[in-house]
Length: 140
Picture 1 (spheres, rainbow, N blue to C red):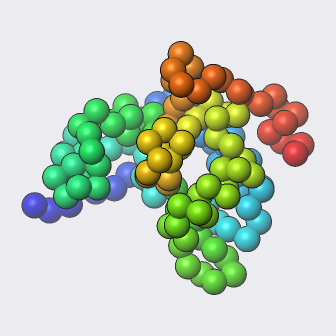
Picture 2 (cartoon, helix red, strand yellow; picture 1 turned 30 degrees about the vertical axis):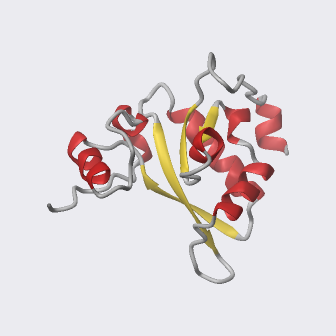
C-alpha cells in the first residue's frame, strides 16, 4: 500500500480551534529556545488513518486528526540538529509549557504513549480546563 500524503498545514485544522493550537505552539516555542517546534501532521484523510492503523502507528480509526482537532509535533534540537523523539524530551517540554493550560492535552498525558500528539482537551473528562489568560500566554 502506498503511504497517503501527510498534511502539515495548520490551516487544515478545524477553524474553531486553530487559535488554540497556534497560541500553544507559540508559547511552547518561546519556552524552548534551543528547539524548533515542527508540526509533522494536522488533519488526516480517512485513507491516511487506515494506513497508519494498518502499520501499527495508530490504534484507532476514530482519531481527532480526522476532524482537524489534533496535531503531531517534533522537537528539533537546534544545537545538535537532531529531532528528539524521546518521551523524556516531551515530558520536559510539557512541564515547561503544559498544553492543558491552553485547552489541549498530549497523547502522553492521556494514554502514557504518543507524546508528540496534541489534541483538544475534553473539558468534561479527566482533565479540567486550565486555560491561561492572554497575559499568561504572551508575557511569561
